[in-house]
Length: 179
Image 1: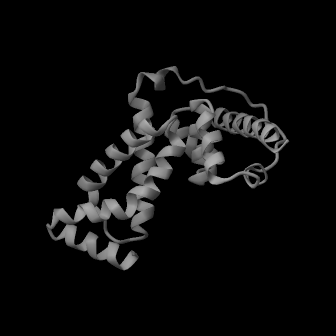
Image 2: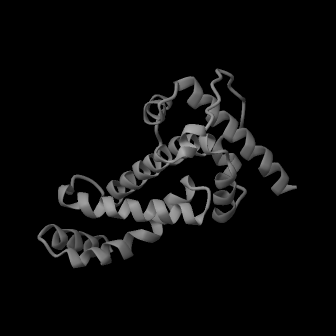
């Protein structure tokens, strides 16, 4: 598929915008999975996905093949998810816990290793929005706390605290699942 995807991108950049449907079909299922991690439910994920692909469509002419297209598209999706939450009134109501307390919690690999992908997704979606955002950015996107703090407009300590709380919640829920 990467060769076909590359040819679709090349065709699109040459002006054949009808081929975007094939790009969408190739990427949408995987990107929907990313959206689900950030969203509270499927409807919200669909909104984020739709907005993401509108942005991908408009920005695709600027893609320079300097790295993975899928990685570039995922970055657009993540940024769109963050923008989605900033634009909603909910974003203003998201309470980021500002604490320097650090918990001694097992790594997320230990926590998540016991569950199916669907169970993991459900647990992540059940996290409070602030914890869900920080958890996703740290665990799945590999951002450092400084980067998360910049993206979300919070302090590094707040990012660390929210991640620790998310892990604690997941571990508590996991203990209920594995018993």
